[in-house]
Image (cartoon, rainbow, N blue to C red; front, side, top):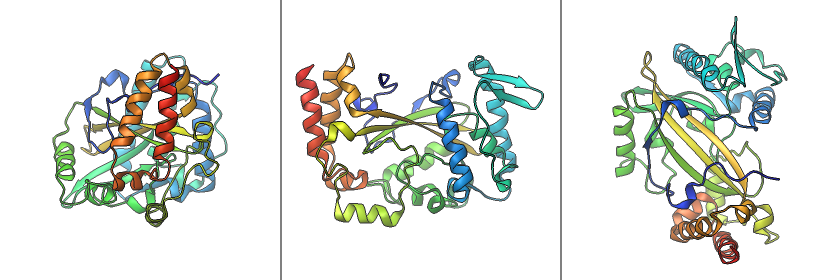
Amino acid sequence: MTPLPTHTPYDGSSKLFTIGLKPLDPAAWMEVDHHLAPYLAEKRRLYSEIPERVFVEEDGTRGAQREVLDLLVAYLPEKFPDTYRRTDAGIGLVDVANHPALPSALTEAPLVEASLLVQEDLILMRRDDSGWRLAAGSLCFPSSWSLTEKFGKPLQRIHEPVPGFGPGTRPAELISRMFDGLQGQAVERYNWSIQADDALYHPLSNVERIDRATNRPSRFPDGDVKAHAFIRVERQTLRKLQSSRDILFTIRIHLDPLAVLERHPDRAALAVSFAAQLEALDTAQLDYKGMTSDRDRLVSVLNHIARDA
């Protein structure tokens, strides 16, 4: 039986198209669950088949990448001693396969090594005169964006397609100031969306996004939303690295079938809040999320869940 959702930001605690950063307990930095082995296997498959799409790095970022790896090597065995063990080489995983082998171009990158310890994707942001830019990243599980298109770009250009968050907007300025002000305290936020399958690797180019917003295709052409819809929840964390002063942005993906809400003890409240958030989205926001054609059907399913609770 599918486990109940770990995170339910659609309960109203994390509204879409808001910044919503909250302090993070350092002890709860990473999440490890029963999906660890399949997530890492999928990362290795992607590294093997499409390495240039899931890992990027600027020259001069290896020191910061190593800093990330060192943080994980220190943190993981303490937090999850049944899953990670210390070795002469640094750290090892219990009962997790290490194949297929990595392409030779990735074997020396500390951020790749770090990414194969955790379910999270790992992005390094670095400050220059243009602002905070994406300087290196392991992104095996993108939520409708392209790592190669965002590589090297500053935050305001990265967020350019997001309604209300483009260059010159107040939210864009606030995010930049938050990055500047981030010191020892880590923070987290949640984002969520709907997709029509359980694929972790879910990229979308700018051209594909424009086409989706223009043509507004249904994700569920057979009309059976409840059978096919998955809730994609992103748990994101930010922390400033002590030595490099870069910012590490982590993204953990949780995929839950929409139908699993029917078994949740708080299903009525969750479904009502979920439906209300969908109904509150304007056309630009629906187009960005790719839900313009399906919003009403999603709301109908959620209302049925609430009524049947």
